[in-house]
Amino acid sequence: MTTTASPAPSNRGARPGTRAHRDRSPDAPARRRRRPLDWSLAGRVAVLVVAAALTLGPVLWTLSTSLRPPADSLRLPPSFLPLNPDVTSYAQVFKQVDMALLVLNSALVTGLIAVGQMVSAALAGYAFAFLRFRGKGALFSLVLATMMVPVQVTIVPVFMLIRGMGLSDTLLALILPAIPTAFGTFLMRQYFLGLPAELAEAAAIDGASPFRIFRSVYAPLAMPGLAIVGILAFNFHWNEFFRPLILTISEQNFTLPLGLVSLQGNMGTGSISVVLAGVVLSMIPALVVFLVGQRTLRDGLTAGAGK
Amino acid sequence: MSTTAAPEKGTPRLSENGRRRQPPPAGTAPSAARGSRAMAWLFLAPTIVGMGVFTLVPIVASILLAFFRWDILSAPQFAGLANFTEITSDPTVRVAFGNTIGFVVVAVVLQLGVALGLAVLVQERLPNWLRVFFRSAFFFPLILSAASVSIFMKYLFNEQFGVVNWLLGTVGVPAVPWLTTPVGSACVVVLVYVWQNFGFSFLLFLGALSSIPQETYEAASIDGATGWRKHRHVTLPLISPTTLVASVMAIINALQVFDQPYVLTRGGPGDSTRTAVMVIFETAFQRLEFGKASAIGVVLMLLIMAVTALQFRLSKRFVFYQ
Image 1 (cartoon, each protein chain N blue to C red):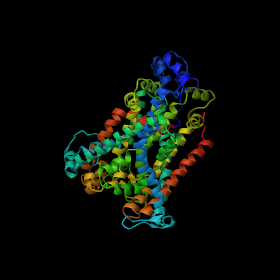
Image 2: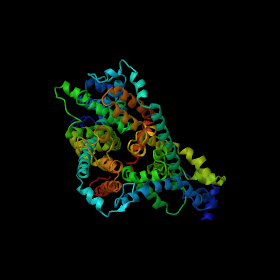
Image 3: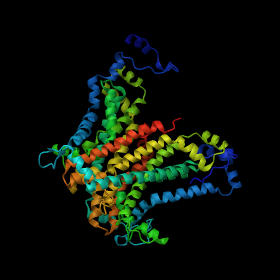
Image 4: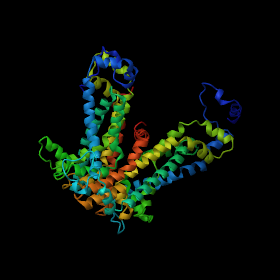
């Protein structure tokens, strides 16, 4: 990868990088004609294609194996493209586990966490950005500091608390502890600080109460920030495994990842296409988020690194 | 203050061209906008109460619990440092921490290396649609659940019917006992983990690379730097702040690895892929030794804090800021 030398220094117009490339598009075809094949570009693309194949291959195999008849699912050579789709496994997975209940549990838990995080982060972020109270700086540092503590370290006391509250083995045990969000609060504070403060003054002159100003003026303007909080919460908690493994006991409270892992355990190496059908179904919502909000998700995930 | 604010309110704000917005004066209207103190606490209540109950109290409780013996059934008994001396002599805990540190080193180096290499390749001259395609492809595994990924990877790495061994077989490599040997299992856990997580570091590096001005490379090439030397002397120093952040985030995440080894190997064979968090889980929820589990958790937390502290130290010494 290091031998992908860019054009020689004398070739000043063709520096790497999109802008230069795009700006010079008029003479690009001419250059291409002079040099029939750009070997450095071809070599780089070849490496990238192999990397992309290794990244997407396992997912394609999962999809096409889930669409093979269960009896064929172990047969080699493997299939990477679902050329003769067969949906037997999808019917089977609903018989093997209560797929509908798993989806419902996951949707409830994830949805309520996402909404709860959006509301609480918007309120707290707004207070940290605009409202006046004693100890603001110290409290904000404390909120940020909680981001450093991994859930695995606090899980034992959280488990005890949930038991003490009489919530063990309920969906609320998964939802309530996940609602306060340090990262979401941080993100929303930054977002509100980017909005003009004059709006609040104008609204206050018109007699709006502080809550009214938040709800009718700032919250609507902060929707893009809220979308990031919501999408991140969805992506994280839809896929979450560790907390559900500990905080739920009976199968009726399992979420999708937990249900699928236990399905794999029960099936052994039997008809793997049935398990994979479940895996594919569980990926659909994440895939929709990926297609619709990839940019939001990317920005949100990397936002933490910028501070 | 309020007297200076009053005339200002009369003049239309928009006409004040080029003048910086002033901090809201403490007059009547702005103070109404900023609310009373009680109002602020109402806004903060859901987050602060929730964090107090579900994060701060558990942290304190976890640290206290580390000095007690408690099986949840009988009353907790003060044990002094017994839990800590026990975990330092417990072979499983020692192996698990050793595994975790080894895992962190290998996985993080691999993750950052792959991510940086691919980011450099994607960032250099490339048709835009290809760049978008590769970026999406490398990002894609991040949206999947580690449990689902481990489920299908377990099939792919199966010794007899797995696709990985089938592919190796087509080039003449005999079947590798991936999940039945200690070394094989460790490799699978690392590969599956890196497969899913390199996209995150890739995005960070891509962001850093795209912010390097083209003029810098032009200046470097006038000085005769090309290819490898260009990256060694221009790219690497310029992205060093991102490299530091990306490594610290990768290390902290890798220290907490659980889902992949739990689903792929359950820590086996033997203890060969047991990690620190797996031991916390088993000590607490399978053997009901909650004090000991908390002690292991405290050690893990200290490790994570040490890495974070190191970040601040290193960023002062080695990172090149423009």
